[in-house]
View (cartoon, rainbow, N blue to C red):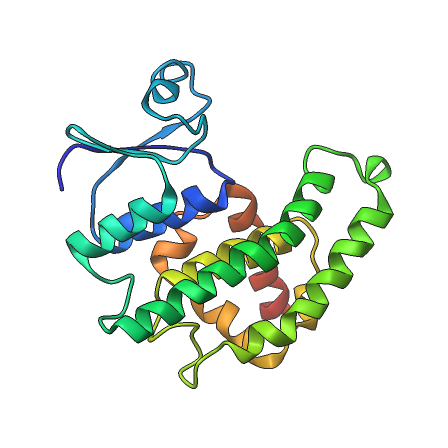
Length: 216
């Protein structure tokens, strides 16, 4: 796949998933930041959603992360299992990550990002932490015996790790995770396509977590 261009935002979880998938598939895409002045008038003309990600490949324009990811899977593989039942299970987990974990992580991130600690609303933060902890047991039950949310690391693991890692980077106490989820997070964050495409704030947080573990 030559000539691929991804208009994206560093901390957008949907953009991060697409970056992971492109790297895993070996697609040498050009990444363009959505707020770069050179492209500020380009990508909005390509989509009715007025948001990123936007992937262009020659004259093909894709503007929904789910469509982009399935396009990458259908052209290169890696992201979804082969049977209809297994693919449905993966899509169910993606829905869980976005519908259940997404709003909780978003509330915490939006309350903490670009605010000094004294400017943050402790009620919003405490509510997000409580909601997150209540969601962890259902999430742990969705893990397979192999320790992934799908048959090996797949699209649903990408969807979940964007929620876990961004929440952790903005202060969610992930040291309280069930052991199986903690092991999963460690495994998925070690994958090259995950950490090398991660938002800057996530890479900084994960480096700090790894240093704390090494020092303990």
